[in-house]
Amino acid sequence: MKLSKMVIFQQAEEVLTEAPFTISVEPGDELYNELEEQDISVILSGVIDLAYREKDGWVIVDYKTDRVEKEEELEKLREVYSNQVEIYARAWKEITGEEVEEVKEKLITFL
Image (cartoon, rainbow, N blue to C red; front, side, top):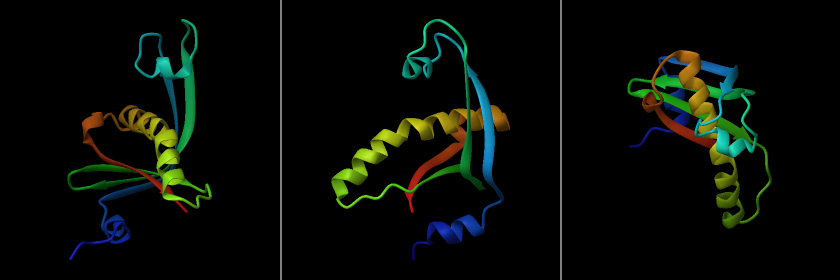
């Protein structure tokens, strides 16, 4: 029997909700290309909806309220938001001091 994510979340070792972050992105950084800025440092800030630690790493969850009617629309939105979740994983590394590889899973959840 497979446990639901909610059960796993309830059994998590550590849980943080609405965790604010601010990171600096320097020219040459892989994230910099996504920002379309020109040769200056950029400050990114945001809020990670949910982060919880399981025995084998962190799970980062981003909630979305977009309304979708077709599976194709859902997949397109997941692609659009995937970069945001990658940024959250990067921010999580800076917040916790843990390597990104320890972020075990990144989820986009449509409510």
